[in-house]
Image (cartoon, rainbow, N blue to C red; front, side):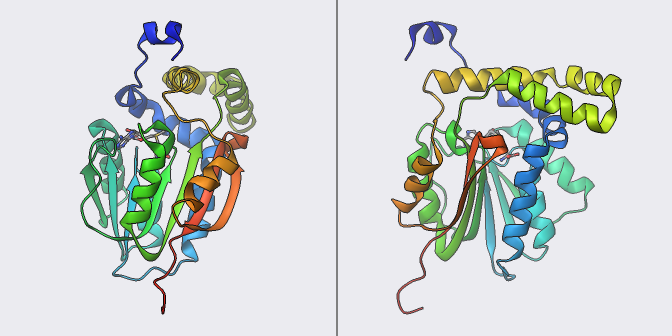
Length: 250
Ligand SMILES: C[S@@+](CC[C@H](N)C(=O)[O-])C[C@H]1O[C@@H](n2cnc3c(N)ncnc32)[C@H](O)[C@@H]1O
């Protein structure tokens, strides 16, 4: 590791980020695109009432809530290791009257998971933060039932803060006007701070950097069959939608 970065002892403060996370999510069209793509993709799966869905590193719950809306009769199990993220997610679900999400604290760096098998696992912008990202992809394979799907979108390239600030500002100015755009940007300065920490951790090698081909390989190497793979989040992230093969004879 770069000694200058080691001296700085950067730690990702997910608790601090949780307070401004949804301000980023609501005002970032590139994030909304992932959410839309997820909703369209999963609505074609025709999950039944016995299906169980996991959201790994669920953050403020946007993907769990979307899953619960598309499939109100399925169980959705939300997992995150940060209790403040979980609280934001739970409060939002309660406000929206959603009852089919179960919230759990779980650190995927420390222990695998229970023996529950899932029909679908969603993992957005969390894999790259784990101590063993390839291990997590293997674990996702094990957690799925045969024929189960994974929808994973993961930040692979180093965040360029100036590039994102300009992008968000120009999108905000288009919808809210200059003054309001500046106000939102100021209110969301914790987002820029969090992104700065993420970029430092990426540069120091503590957060996984990958290209689309590496990301696809990580899934095929475990046995997944790729349904769709593309860059998202303005080319910063990689998306894989893949299936664990059915058991032979099915
Ligand atoms: C960038 S946020 C993404 C949140 C959400 N998936 C979304 O896209 O809105 C990453 C999340 O992963 C969680 N996380 C990071 N490492 C984790 C671990 N080892 N186990 C469980 N959750 C983890 C963080 O607490 C944070 O909520």
